[in-house]
Length: 322
Image (cartoon, rainbow, N blue to C red; front, side):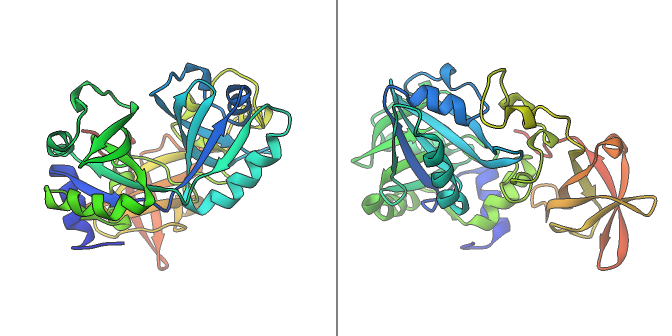
């Protein structure tokens, strides 16, 4: 969860560069002549837009509403993709994808135990990595996915991340991850834990499955409607219904708020906090909250904390953008 402390690690990523061990994430390989058709069927974004060496954020919609998960898809080669899924959803996602694969010429392989995954994030990431790889990192744009040598190891690098900063995710053989981790620390990366990862993603307005997304939350409550493209997919008739709630950002003066705290207007509960923290960057509490759609344009709310209401101001998401 933390090494030197959440604030120190958070600040290191915002101002320099940090490294997260996210090897607990799941990886599934999707191969075969029906791989694209299968992924188009089980996701909302347009996978046909991908080319080898490119990555895409996507959703796995549920059959009857909500999301099974939010994922990243990396196109390795024609008819071959690597998907990265949330750690807590590995078994659920595998069962869901396997259940829908039968009508397609596709092979699914769970490679979660094979991969180590290290996320190097922050404005100094490229300059710290460049001397230790054989690839011109400056030529690799956002969502690039490519093989490289790093510290003498064969890895896959992706210009992706979950902090609101520039950076790369390093896919490596699990047996080599610890050695690469140590080498990253030696060249100036600050070790960062999942506590800082959460404060960073919240400032950047990134939703987290189990908080802003779930199998019961309408995903279009969020600001991510761009993930749903004009195509037929699992659950398409449900995802296109109008959500009754809207995800908003809230700023408070002093009192940090947490998931589940009631959000009120005029004493009436109109929603709840989905994620909250005391922002290390801004020095005051921030939160994301799901509120009734008819209240989402109001500017002033109250959040109930231990029986007492505290004023909160609606702010535009994301809270932070470099």
